Amino acid sequence: MKNENVLLLDGSKVAGEIKDQLQVRVNQLKENGITPCLATILVGDDPSSATYVKMKGNACKRIGMISKRIDLPKETTTQELLDVIVELNNDSSVHGILLQHPVPEQIDERAAFEAISIEKDVDGVTSLGFGQTALGFGEYPSCTPAAILEIIDYYKLPIEGKHAVVIGRSPILGKPVSMLLLNRNATVTTCHSRTQNLPELVKQADIIVAAVGKANFVQGDWVKEGAVILDAGYNEGNVGDVDYEACLPKASAITPVPGGVGPVTISMLLKQTVAAAEKLV
Image 1 (spheres, rainbow, N blue to C red):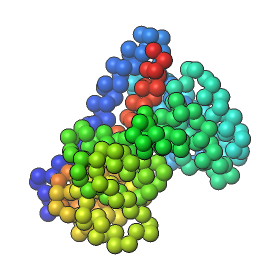
Image 2: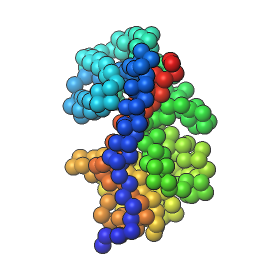
Image 3: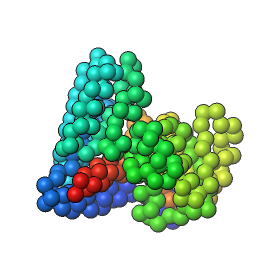
Image 4: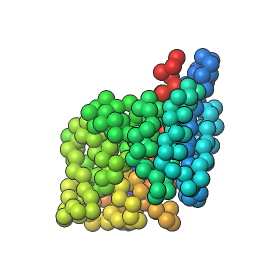
């Protein structure tokens, strides 16, 4: 049974408005002789990763940014990747650096992330960036957590005093979104694969963030009446981590998949790259 009062959190609409605002800022930067540039590094030939990189490049071009794409063979060593990152760190025309995840198994991904200059870490992957985000003064949080907060703010949904349950603890999603919500005065429970009585914990949530990477994982009977649901999952078959149809009757607000968190994630990457470029004015 459909809940007629549920608020559909339209990420495509949010992303569109962000990009419209960014286009104005990009044009202003160009008047000052600066064109914001995002460098994306793709190691290997994973088709999904190649698609993501292409989408990010197209999004840059649509608002007048430069997309600098670096394709490296799957045999690339950690040192060879580090050399590329250092070169981009030293390139004054590059304002943001994105290393597409995952990288081939022979590469030390954490070492590669750490090599990215904090001034150009617009995807929020360095430990320094995470630490600054956790302490409340990070400028470029991980883009999906930033997107989740952007959607909440766009629809003027309250965070302060609410109980948020985050399902997932990945270093670029579950952990940073928990910190962002905590810094906004939510009470946060972070759940993971070792959490006991998960459905009972989720039932306590005013805000549910699903970031577990399992299709239709969150069930309708886990959700209390009036909960706000933000589904950050994207699985085979264009489905999220939340059983959408089952949870819809309970929710007061919910993100669809696709068209929810995903489009805003890309727009946050662009927004943070533009912000990095504006520091040069």
